[in-house]
Length: 362
Ligand SMILES: *Cc1c(COP(=O)(O)O)cnc(C)c1O
Image (cartoon, rainbow, N blue to C red):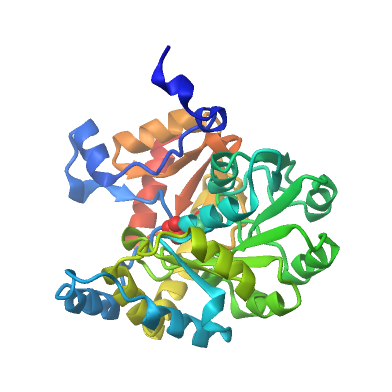
């Protein structure tokens, strides 16, 4: 008998997450030089990290012999968001807090509800806690809130919503999300994943964090990986009712967020100029890529994030051709979209290179 047979059956049933291909890996595989490769596969910030965050990291290098003090970041986030400090849960990336939420509320015999084509971490977090996944068919590639409400069973303890969603870029107007919150039983947790919140035009945003007072079953998650440009440092957070945050903090590893990440995140929060530049660059790049896709006769799903998903026949073959020419995008067959590719909005030159290579690859 093999030792793996002793593992929990629900762990053995998990399909591993497939990340975007790293630049160095493609360079090795294709014998290309790293400088020639354009990676638009993981929704990273093409401007890099905020200069203020970089300076803070350099400062924090002296002090790495000490365990992290997370207080300054928790205090800054609480103030920025208008909540109490005991409502913040820090994560090693927001994926970490998604997992903490699942560990608190899911187990064998319980289920979670999410949409088809939603973020890959929802099934991963659900299955690793032993929960069952209820996957609701999508509506115009996005979440169908009425169908998700109807899918809630007596054993359902969580609903996952990504707004905007990755990899489709679809967006639910906040008034609709609020109606959904009113319709969900009070004993079902709703995780509202707002990783791309900062890319929404101000008119589309909402004070969703303020809803937690009315809905103690609401957990909101955000990240420093996207507009703040800190994906490699791994830092994100959840905002929840104090009693929910307390439970999540009990299962959290005490030092899940490191000194450099805390320092960088504190500085990044205050770098309004960098955030504004990143936002503006994304708007322009989105127009550039969407115009290019239209010119090539390719349909896309209108996106509210820093990426866009477009339809292409034989997605895997086109992806292979792009890779050979040093352009990394994201195949999303694993999300039930084998004839689509997702491209992250990059710098103007990167977007142009992507469009040029795509045209040759069709
Ligand atoms: C990128 C992303 C995250 C953030 O992940 P981190 O662990 O914070 O890097 C969370 N949710 C969605 C939907 C994402 O696309």
